[in-house]
Length: 215
Image 1 (spheres, rainbow, N blue to C red):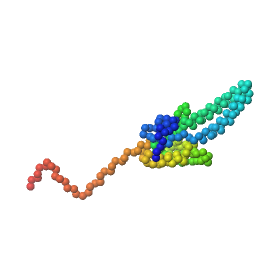
Image 2 (image 1 turned 180 degrees about the vertical axis):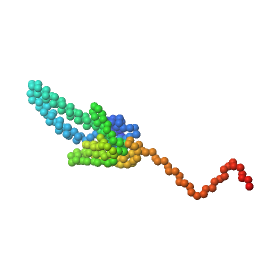
Image 3 (image 1 turned 90 degrees about the horizontal axis):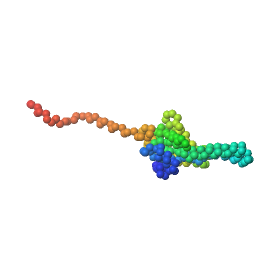
Image 4 (image 1 turned 120 degrees about the vertical axis):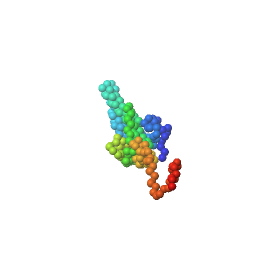
């Protein structure tokens, strides 16, 4: 199974892959969330933006309403700009060892889950997700609740599901089906078994150097 090489990724995703993956890792999946994640912020932004524009143009000579309208416009644009920047900067990355979610505009945060800890993967698509082409991944892992238990708005989730499932449950990649530690390092091979005991009589040659026996 071939995965995306760092040189073929978008600039932002390539920077994350080069910065956060170990030299021995290879990115199998690297994508940002579907643009549909911006639908809710857009519906929140537009009414506030229109109200701010209305206050600004209602009475240009009225400094109170004009100032209030300008502040509302600036706040609405700042809110929407942060949401768009967060969507642009957040990437879902699956390597041959780990699942990572990079996020943050000013302060970057990297959340990871070793493949070895994943015991099951659920893929869910809502009706809107089937129309627009996105879905949700839900990871089940051994031990306590993980921060990466659910990743929403993943584009082409059906293709991603097949690729990630093949990676997780294949011993070739150090996933959940293979041995090794939490970083995907394979266990050393067991020592060879001792040779079986030899039964029956064995003739031995006389030890050289011994004096001959006297009759």
